[in-house]
Length: 393
Image (tube, rainbow, N blue to C red):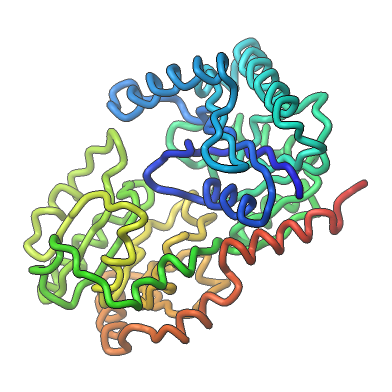
Protein backbone atom coordinates (compact mmCIF):
# COMPACT_ATOMS: atom_id res chain seq x y z
CA UNK A 1 0.00 0.00 0.00
CA UNK A 2 1.26 3.48 -0.89
CA UNK A 3 0.14 6.90 0.28
CA UNK A 4 -0.54 9.65 -2.27
CA UNK A 5 -0.73 13.42 -2.00
CA UNK A 6 -2.61 14.66 -5.07
CA UNK A 7 -2.41 18.34 -5.99
CA UNK A 8 -5.51 18.85 -8.15
CA UNK A 9 -6.83 21.66 -10.34
CA UNK A 10 -10.45 20.82 -9.56
CA UNK A 11 -12.49 20.69 -6.39
CA UNK A 12 -13.69 17.27 -5.31
CA UNK A 13 -17.38 18.08 -5.71
CA UNK A 14 -17.13 19.72 -9.15
CA UNK A 15 -20.11 18.59 -11.28
CA UNK A 16 -17.86 17.66 -14.21
CA UNK A 17 -15.35 15.12 -12.96
CA UNK A 18 -11.96 15.03 -14.67
CA UNK A 19 -8.71 13.07 -14.43
CA UNK A 20 -8.00 14.28 -10.91
CA UNK A 21 -11.00 12.84 -9.08
CA UNK A 22 -11.03 9.68 -11.19
CA UNK A 23 -7.33 9.08 -10.53
CA UNK A 24 -7.82 9.50 -6.79
CA UNK A 25 -10.71 7.00 -6.87
CA UNK A 26 -8.70 4.51 -8.92
CA UNK A 27 -5.75 4.73 -6.50
CA UNK A 28 -8.13 4.02 -3.65
CA UNK A 29 -9.58 1.09 -5.61
CA UNK A 30 -6.08 -0.33 -5.91
CA UNK A 31 -5.69 -0.28 -2.12
CA UNK A 32 -3.88 3.02 -1.59
CA UNK A 33 -4.61 6.04 0.61
CA UNK A 34 -5.06 9.52 -0.84
CA UNK A 35 -4.88 13.09 0.38
CA UNK A 36 -6.65 15.09 -2.35
CA UNK A 37 -5.76 18.79 -2.31
CA UNK A 38 -8.34 20.92 -4.09
CA UNK A 39 -7.55 23.68 -6.58
CA UNK A 40 -5.23 26.40 -5.31
CA UNK A 41 -6.80 28.94 -7.70
CA UNK A 42 -4.70 28.98 -10.86
CA UNK A 43 -6.61 31.70 -12.67
CA UNK A 44 -7.70 35.13 -11.55
CA UNK A 45 -11.30 35.04 -10.26
CA UNK A 46 -13.96 36.90 -12.21
CA UNK A 47 -15.98 38.85 -9.65
CA UNK A 48 -18.68 39.43 -12.27
CA UNK A 49 -19.22 35.67 -12.29
CA UNK A 50 -21.73 34.38 -9.75
CA UNK A 51 -20.05 30.99 -9.89
CA UNK A 52 -16.64 32.46 -9.08
CA UNK A 53 -18.03 34.53 -6.21
CA UNK A 54 -19.88 31.51 -4.83
CA UNK A 55 -16.70 29.42 -5.16
CA UNK A 56 -14.68 32.01 -3.25
CA UNK A 57 -17.25 32.19 -0.43
CA UNK A 58 -17.51 28.41 -0.30
CA UNK A 59 -13.72 28.02 -0.31
CA UNK A 60 -13.39 30.50 2.59
CA UNK A 61 -15.91 28.47 4.62
CA UNK A 62 -14.25 25.16 3.79
CA UNK A 63 -10.80 26.69 4.31
CA UNK A 64 -11.56 27.75 7.87
CA UNK A 65 -13.02 24.31 8.61
CA UNK A 66 -9.87 22.72 7.23
CA UNK A 67 -7.67 24.91 9.44
CA UNK A 68 -9.72 23.93 12.50
CA UNK A 69 -10.51 20.27 11.79
CA UNK A 70 -8.00 19.23 9.12
CA UNK A 71 -8.68 17.44 5.84
CA UNK A 72 -12.17 15.98 5.57
CA UNK A 73 -12.48 12.24 5.10
CA UNK A 74 -14.60 12.00 1.96
CA UNK A 75 -14.72 8.20 1.97
CA UNK A 76 -12.56 5.37 3.20
CA UNK A 77 -8.89 6.15 2.45
CA UNK A 78 -9.62 9.46 0.69
CA UNK A 79 -9.26 12.77 2.51
CA UNK A 80 -10.01 16.11 0.85
CA UNK A 81 -8.08 19.20 1.84
CA UNK A 82 -9.59 22.58 0.96
CA UNK A 83 -6.77 25.10 1.52
CA UNK A 84 -7.60 28.65 2.56
CA UNK A 85 -5.42 30.48 0.04
CA UNK A 86 -5.39 33.74 -1.89
CA UNK A 87 -6.27 32.70 -5.47
CA UNK A 88 -4.11 33.41 -8.55
CA UNK A 89 -1.41 35.02 -6.41
CA UNK A 90 1.49 32.94 -7.72
CA UNK A 91 3.15 35.95 -9.36
CA UNK A 92 3.38 37.90 -6.08
CA UNK A 93 6.34 36.61 -4.00
CA UNK A 94 5.03 37.61 -0.56
CA UNK A 95 1.54 36.21 -1.10
CA UNK A 96 3.00 33.12 -2.78
CA UNK A 97 5.12 32.42 0.31
CA UNK A 98 2.12 32.95 2.58
CA UNK A 99 -0.02 30.51 0.57
CA UNK A 100 2.77 27.94 0.49
CA UNK A 101 3.34 28.23 4.26
CA UNK A 102 -0.34 27.61 5.06
CA UNK A 103 -0.60 24.70 2.64
CA UNK A 104 2.63 23.14 3.88
CA UNK A 105 1.43 23.25 7.50
CA UNK A 106 -1.91 21.66 6.54
CA UNK A 107 -0.15 18.89 4.63
CA UNK A 108 2.32 18.22 7.44
CA UNK A 109 -0.52 17.99 9.95
CA UNK A 110 -2.37 15.43 7.84
CA UNK A 111 0.76 13.40 7.12
CA UNK A 112 1.34 13.15 10.86
CA UNK A 113 -2.33 12.49 11.69
CA UNK A 114 -2.84 9.76 9.05
CA UNK A 115 0.71 8.39 9.49
CA UNK A 116 1.59 8.71 5.81
CA UNK A 117 4.96 7.11 5.07
CA UNK A 118 7.08 8.36 2.15
CA UNK A 119 4.04 9.43 0.12
CA UNK A 120 4.07 9.77 -3.63
CA UNK A 121 3.36 13.34 -4.66
CA UNK A 122 1.12 13.40 -7.72
CA UNK A 123 0.46 16.85 -9.12
CA UNK A 124 -1.59 18.34 -11.95
CA UNK A 125 -0.06 21.82 -11.72
CA UNK A 126 3.35 23.34 -10.93
CA UNK A 127 2.50 25.64 -8.00
CA UNK A 128 3.56 23.17 -5.32
CA UNK A 129 7.30 23.61 -4.94
CA UNK A 130 7.36 25.69 -1.73
CA UNK A 131 4.66 23.50 -0.16
CA UNK A 132 6.68 20.27 -0.36
CA UNK A 133 10.05 21.60 0.82
CA UNK A 134 11.28 19.41 3.68
CA UNK A 135 8.57 16.79 3.11
CA UNK A 136 9.88 13.22 2.92
CA UNK A 137 8.36 11.64 -0.18
CA UNK A 138 9.11 8.67 -2.41
CA UNK A 139 8.57 10.15 -5.87
CA UNK A 140 7.29 13.36 -7.43
CA UNK A 141 5.02 12.75 -10.43
CA UNK A 142 3.68 15.43 -12.76
CA UNK A 143 0.51 14.26 -14.55
CA UNK A 144 0.24 16.80 -17.35
CA UNK A 145 -3.26 16.47 -18.81
CA UNK A 146 -3.87 19.92 -20.37
CA UNK A 147 -2.08 23.02 -21.53
CA UNK A 148 -3.22 25.03 -18.52
CA UNK A 149 -1.07 27.96 -19.59
CA UNK A 150 -3.57 28.65 -22.40
CA UNK A 151 -6.66 28.74 -20.18
CA UNK A 152 -8.22 32.23 -20.05
CA UNK A 153 -7.28 34.04 -16.85
CA UNK A 154 -3.97 32.23 -16.26
CA UNK A 155 -0.66 34.11 -16.44
CA UNK A 156 0.97 32.13 -19.26
CA UNK A 157 4.57 33.26 -18.76
CA UNK A 158 4.44 32.67 -15.00
CA UNK A 159 2.84 29.25 -15.44
CA UNK A 160 5.43 28.06 -17.97
CA UNK A 161 8.29 29.26 -15.77
CA UNK A 162 6.93 27.33 -12.78
CA UNK A 163 6.18 24.29 -14.94
CA UNK A 164 9.78 24.14 -16.14
CA UNK A 165 10.98 24.17 -12.52
CA UNK A 166 8.62 21.30 -11.73
CA UNK A 167 9.70 19.32 -14.77
CA UNK A 168 13.35 19.55 -13.77
CA UNK A 169 12.57 18.36 -10.24
CA UNK A 170 10.03 15.64 -11.08
CA UNK A 171 10.98 11.97 -10.99
CA UNK A 172 8.35 11.03 -13.55
CA UNK A 173 6.09 12.87 -15.99
CA UNK A 174 2.99 11.47 -17.68
CA UNK A 175 1.20 13.35 -20.45
CA UNK A 176 -2.14 12.68 -22.12
CA UNK A 177 -1.09 13.83 -25.61
CA UNK A 178 2.01 13.53 -27.76
CA UNK A 179 2.04 17.34 -28.03
CA UNK A 180 2.36 17.69 -24.26
CA UNK A 181 5.06 15.02 -24.24
CA UNK A 182 7.11 17.00 -26.76
CA UNK A 183 6.84 20.10 -24.58
CA UNK A 184 7.67 18.33 -21.32
CA UNK A 185 10.47 16.06 -22.50
CA UNK A 186 12.60 19.11 -23.31
CA UNK A 187 13.00 19.61 -19.55
CA UNK A 188 12.44 16.05 -18.24
CA UNK A 189 13.64 13.00 -20.18
CA UNK A 190 11.64 10.65 -17.99
CA UNK A 191 8.36 11.60 -19.71
CA UNK A 192 5.83 9.14 -21.10
CA UNK A 193 2.63 9.58 -23.08
CA UNK A 194 -0.54 7.74 -22.07
CA UNK A 195 -3.90 8.85 -23.49
CA UNK A 196 -6.92 9.78 -21.40
CA UNK A 197 -9.02 6.83 -20.26
CA UNK A 198 -12.59 5.95 -19.26
CA UNK A 199 -14.79 4.16 -16.76
CA UNK A 200 -15.85 1.52 -19.28
CA UNK A 201 -18.21 -0.28 -16.89
CA UNK A 202 -20.15 2.93 -16.31
CA UNK A 203 -20.50 4.17 -19.89
CA UNK A 204 -21.07 0.70 -21.36
CA UNK A 205 -24.31 0.63 -19.34
CA UNK A 206 -25.67 2.30 -22.48
CA UNK A 207 -25.80 -1.18 -24.04
CA UNK A 208 -28.32 -2.34 -21.46
CA UNK A 209 -32.06 -1.81 -21.75
CA UNK A 210 -32.60 1.53 -20.05
CA UNK A 211 -35.55 3.80 -19.50
CA UNK A 212 -35.58 6.66 -22.00
CA UNK A 213 -35.19 10.00 -20.20
CA UNK A 214 -38.42 11.99 -20.35
CA UNK A 215 -36.78 15.08 -21.85
CA UNK A 216 -35.66 13.28 -25.00
CA UNK A 217 -38.63 10.99 -25.65
CA UNK A 218 -40.22 13.45 -28.07
CA UNK A 219 -36.98 14.51 -29.73
CA UNK A 220 -36.91 13.03 -33.26
CA UNK A 221 -34.18 10.68 -34.42
CA UNK A 222 -31.45 10.60 -35.60
CA UNK A 223 -30.08 12.18 -32.44
CA UNK A 224 -26.60 13.69 -32.36
CA UNK A 225 -25.06 14.45 -28.96
CA UNK A 226 -22.43 16.63 -27.36
CA UNK A 227 -21.98 16.49 -23.59
CA UNK A 228 -19.71 18.59 -21.39
CA UNK A 229 -19.03 22.22 -20.55
CA UNK A 230 -20.09 24.49 -23.42
CA UNK A 231 -17.03 26.70 -23.37
CA UNK A 232 -16.38 29.10 -26.23
CA UNK A 233 -12.62 28.73 -26.03
CA UNK A 234 -13.05 25.03 -26.80
CA UNK A 235 -16.36 24.50 -28.65
CA UNK A 236 -16.71 25.86 -32.19
CA UNK A 237 -20.23 27.25 -31.88
CA UNK A 238 -20.16 28.71 -35.38
CA UNK A 239 -19.35 25.31 -36.88
CA UNK A 240 -22.11 23.71 -34.84
CA UNK A 241 -24.58 26.41 -35.86
CA UNK A 242 -23.75 25.99 -39.56
CA UNK A 243 -23.93 22.18 -39.41
CA UNK A 244 -27.27 22.20 -37.56
CA UNK A 245 -28.66 24.79 -40.01
CA UNK A 246 -28.00 22.63 -43.08
CA UNK A 247 -29.06 19.35 -41.42
CA UNK A 248 -32.60 20.14 -40.35
CA UNK A 249 -33.49 16.44 -40.38
CA UNK A 250 -31.07 15.78 -37.51
CA UNK A 251 -31.63 16.54 -33.83
CA UNK A 252 -28.64 18.03 -32.01
CA UNK A 253 -28.69 17.50 -28.26
CA UNK A 254 -26.39 19.50 -25.99
CA UNK A 255 -25.93 18.26 -22.43
CA UNK A 256 -23.99 20.73 -20.33
CA UNK A 257 -23.89 24.26 -19.00
CA UNK A 258 -22.29 27.24 -20.68
CA UNK A 259 -19.03 28.40 -19.12
CA UNK A 260 -19.83 30.74 -16.22
CA UNK A 261 -19.65 34.39 -17.20
CA UNK A 262 -19.67 33.54 -20.89
CA UNK A 263 -21.90 35.58 -23.21
CA UNK A 264 -21.60 34.07 -26.65
CA UNK A 265 -23.96 35.44 -29.29
CA UNK A 266 -23.48 32.49 -31.64
CA UNK A 267 -24.45 30.08 -28.90
CA UNK A 268 -27.59 32.11 -28.17
CA UNK A 269 -28.54 31.86 -31.86
CA UNK A 270 -27.68 28.17 -31.90
CA UNK A 271 -30.17 27.45 -29.12
CA UNK A 272 -32.92 29.09 -31.18
CA UNK A 273 -32.66 26.59 -34.03
CA UNK A 274 -35.67 24.22 -34.04
CA UNK A 275 -33.49 21.09 -34.26
CA UNK A 276 -31.12 22.06 -31.43
CA UNK A 277 -31.99 20.99 -27.87
CA UNK A 278 -29.83 22.58 -25.17
CA UNK A 279 -30.93 20.57 -22.14
CA UNK A 280 -28.37 21.81 -19.62
CA UNK A 281 -26.26 19.83 -17.19
CA UNK A 282 -26.99 16.16 -16.57
CA UNK A 283 -25.28 14.18 -13.84
CA UNK A 284 -22.47 11.75 -14.55
CA UNK A 285 -24.62 8.88 -13.31
CA UNK A 286 -27.37 9.70 -15.84
CA UNK A 287 -25.14 10.01 -18.92
CA UNK A 288 -25.42 6.33 -20.00
CA UNK A 289 -29.22 6.69 -20.20
CA UNK A 290 -28.87 9.56 -22.63
CA UNK A 291 -26.04 8.03 -24.62
CA UNK A 292 -28.05 4.83 -25.10
CA UNK A 293 -30.54 6.84 -27.19
CA UNK A 294 -28.01 8.60 -29.43
CA UNK A 295 -27.06 7.74 -33.00
CA UNK A 296 -23.82 9.72 -33.21
CA UNK A 297 -21.65 12.00 -31.10
CA UNK A 298 -19.75 15.13 -32.05
CA UNK A 299 -16.60 16.95 -31.00
CA UNK A 300 -17.00 20.31 -32.80
CA UNK A 301 -13.82 21.62 -31.23
CA UNK A 302 -11.94 24.79 -32.07
CA UNK A 303 -8.36 24.35 -33.24
CA UNK A 304 -6.26 26.59 -31.01
CA UNK A 305 -3.31 26.60 -28.63
CA UNK A 306 -5.29 24.97 -25.82
CA UNK A 307 -7.06 22.25 -27.83
CA UNK A 308 -3.89 21.26 -29.69
CA UNK A 309 -2.69 19.82 -26.37
CA UNK A 310 -6.02 18.22 -25.48
CA UNK A 311 -7.14 14.59 -25.44
CA UNK A 312 -10.94 14.78 -24.86
CA UNK A 313 -12.17 12.44 -22.15
CA UNK A 314 -15.40 12.28 -24.16
CA UNK A 315 -13.66 10.26 -26.87
CA UNK A 316 -13.53 7.02 -24.89
CA UNK A 317 -16.82 7.82 -23.12
CA UNK A 318 -18.64 7.92 -26.46
CA UNK A 319 -16.79 4.82 -27.67
CA UNK A 320 -17.71 2.92 -24.48
CA UNK A 321 -21.36 3.74 -25.09
CA UNK A 322 -21.15 2.42 -28.66
CA UNK A 323 -21.46 5.76 -30.45
CA UNK A 324 -19.43 6.78 -33.54
CA UNK A 325 -17.81 10.22 -33.28
CA UNK A 326 -17.43 13.10 -35.70
CA UNK A 327 -14.62 15.46 -34.75
CA UNK A 328 -12.61 18.36 -36.03
CA UNK A 329 -8.96 17.60 -36.86
CA UNK A 330 -7.54 17.84 -33.35
CA UNK A 331 -3.97 16.65 -32.81
CA UNK A 332 -5.12 13.77 -30.61
CA UNK A 333 -6.59 12.14 -33.73
CA UNK A 334 -3.05 11.51 -34.94
CA UNK A 335 -2.64 8.85 -32.23
CA UNK A 336 -6.15 7.28 -32.16
CA UNK A 337 -8.62 6.50 -34.94
CA UNK A 338 -11.15 3.89 -33.80
CA UNK A 339 -14.71 5.09 -34.24
CA UNK A 340 -13.66 8.52 -35.54
CA UNK A 341 -14.80 10.49 -38.55
CA UNK A 342 -12.56 13.54 -39.01
CA UNK A 343 -13.82 16.72 -40.67
CA UNK A 344 -12.12 19.98 -41.66
CA UNK A 345 -15.10 22.17 -42.54
CA UNK A 346 -18.90 22.37 -42.47
CA UNK A 347 -19.45 20.23 -45.57
CA UNK A 348 -17.12 17.48 -44.37
CA UNK A 349 -18.67 17.56 -40.91
CA UNK A 350 -22.14 17.08 -42.40
CA UNK A 351 -20.95 14.27 -44.67
CA UNK A 352 -19.22 12.55 -41.78
CA UNK A 353 -22.37 12.66 -39.67
CA UNK A 354 -24.31 10.88 -42.41
CA UNK A 355 -21.49 8.37 -42.90
CA UNK A 356 -21.55 7.60 -39.19
CA UNK A 357 -25.32 7.16 -39.26
CA UNK A 358 -25.04 4.67 -42.10
CA UNK A 359 -22.33 2.86 -40.23
CA UNK A 360 -24.49 2.67 -37.08
CA UNK A 361 -23.66 2.15 -33.44
CA UNK A 362 -20.89 -0.20 -32.35
CA UNK A 363 -21.56 -3.57 -30.81
CA UNK A 364 -20.49 -4.17 -27.21
CA UNK A 365 -17.59 -6.31 -28.45
CA UNK A 366 -16.42 -3.55 -30.80
CA UNK A 367 -16.63 -0.91 -28.07
CA UNK A 368 -14.68 -3.06 -25.64
CA UNK A 369 -12.00 -3.80 -28.25
CA UNK A 370 -11.70 -0.11 -29.19
CA UNK A 371 -11.28 0.92 -25.54
CA UNK A 372 -8.84 -1.89 -24.78
CA UNK A 373 -6.86 -1.23 -21.61
CA UNK A 374 -7.64 2.49 -21.65
CA UNK A 375 -9.59 2.27 -18.40
CA UNK A 376 -8.91 4.03 -15.12
CA UNK A 377 -7.89 0.92 -13.18
CA UNK A 378 -5.65 -0.50 -15.91
CA UNK A 379 -4.00 2.86 -16.60
CA UNK A 380 -3.42 3.60 -12.93
CA UNK A 381 -1.80 0.20 -12.45
CA UNK A 382 0.44 0.81 -15.47
CA UNK A 383 1.50 4.29 -14.36
CA UNK A 384 2.20 3.14 -10.80
CA UNK A 385 4.23 0.21 -12.12
CA UNK A 386 6.38 2.60 -14.17
CA UNK A 387 6.97 5.32 -11.59
CA UNK A 388 10.34 3.93 -10.61
CA UNK A 389 11.41 3.00 -14.13
CA UNK A 390 13.83 5.58 -15.44
CA UNK A 391 13.50 7.73 -12.35
CA UNK A 392 16.64 9.12 -10.78
CA UNK A 393 17.57 7.61 -7.42
